Image 1 (cartoon, rainbow, N blue to C red):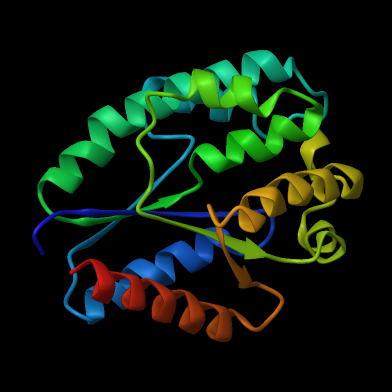
Image 2 (cartoon, rainbow, N blue to C red; image 1 turned 90 degrees about the horizontal axis):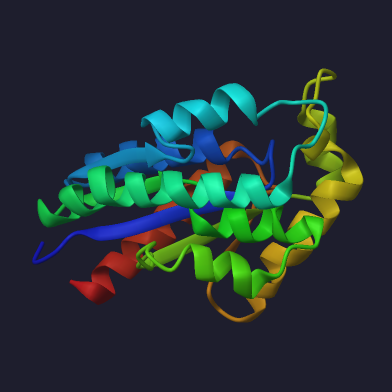
Length: 199
């Protein structure tokens, strides 16, 4: 490959996204591509702070603070992981990226243009996929000990924001209501088709 390719996979909590990103990387490797899996929050210090203090909390903290922390972590993620891997001509698959901030913090009422502004140093993915699963289904999949973000009303609002980007052709929608295998096949087929076009 002449250059690396950056793919991000988005979706509601419980949509199967983490499973699908792993299956995608494995599928690409079987096809001979040098694919690497990464995720947000990242494995850096800011990402670890977010995991410890913000994820899976019953009480919501400031959405502005959340957005700023995720943006800071994203800069570290891009500079320390994504760009170096792309420079080695690898296919980088990220489990969540900037669209998660837009969807989740945007669902709280934060201005999307402001969220975009604080994320202006985040590079644009080459391909962004949204695994679309019915909010009623994802809420049933989530554990009883769920965070404040994992209720039905919130997930519906989050999906609404994601769908705005689908409508603008910034996100490519994949029907996630099918079996794990069927979804994995469609995602792999979509990525391989994209790779065929760019290379």
